[in-house]
Amino acid sequence: MSDIRIDSAFDSGNIEVLSVEGAKARLAIPADHQSEFRQWFHFRVSGAAGRELELVITGLNTSAYPGGWPDYDACVSEDREFWGRAQSSFDKDADGGSLTIRYTPASEIAWFAYFAPYSMERHHDLVSEAAASEGVDYRHLGTTLDGQPIDCLELGRGEKQVWLYARQHPGETQAEWWMEGALEVLTDPSDPVAMVLRQKCRFHIVPNCNPDGSRRGHLRTNAAGTNLNREWAEPSAEASPEVLAIRNAMDATGVHFAMDVHGDEAIPAVFLAGFEGIPSWSDEQGERYYRYERILDRRTPDFQTKLGYPKTGSGKANLTISTNQVAERFGCTAMTLEMPYKDLVDLPEPAQGWSPERCKLLARDCLAALVEWLDGEEG
Image (cartoon, rainbow, N blue to C red; front, side):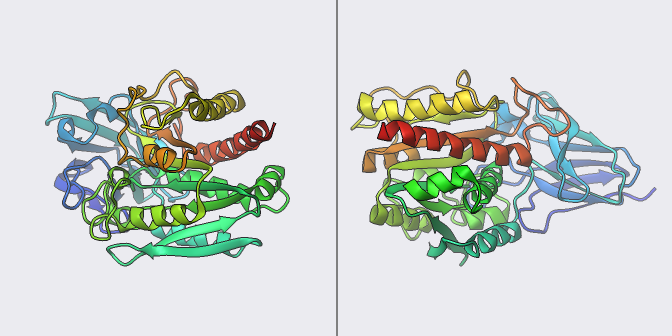
């Protein structure tokens, strides 16, 4: 039989083909442009119908997060709508650390990715649909180095200034699936959660902070090889125009509540990270964050507090990180939401693992938790 064909020259595509023999291939993940970060892969295999594929991604011991590969199953789709999981196994002693993906497609083309992709075309559909909704204002915050717009959607008539922003790290596509779920709730005129939030808050929503990295197929950086979530203390037009534009807009509105939405490679759980260690830390400000965390933990079994990042010591917070900078700069409640690439250890679903559908459901729970949190603030 003929050799399969592997392609990645498309929106967010990223893979290097080392060799192909029949239905087997050896692959490697290229690094982000002008960066050593490499973890994101997205490619398609054609000529595959009915054939058991064996796809070996090599050199993973030196990837950005080697801890992300054990107990991880690659995402796969044959229609680019439903994303399931392909049986995968990691061997740290083979080919510098290799992930072997095995899958037998029913159709001629199968797509594989580190997580279900969220293309820039889908992003534009999301922004256009939301902008056409009643009560939504569109703002062009700035332009990326590749010339793409930095899109912001605003809605609500309340006094609380709420900022939701996602995909500083473009390979963390979970974040924009979450944004799709959040916007579906907030733009629904009959949704009771949205009705309360639109009355009490003014939302500023940036569904994708890093369009260039997204289109280029990067894991973590923009077109200049800059990790945007290390630029919040001193963003620049040359290295991080995305952060500069968003932070300037925040300065103009003020911030009462902020959520920066991400994905984590290694930890098989959904969790929050706060702003412990900022210079102006107070127990009162910290308790507002912890109270939101407790509410979300109570609202959904997809969230938990046992697994997560260690808390930063007093006065040692890195103010180049968004959540720390925003909490320090505005004295507000700020947080980073992390979702997994792997399946949830506490609530596994082997066919899909953590999925776009669960990202979107989590967004609704986060917004419902915000309603309860706001009630407590007023009480």
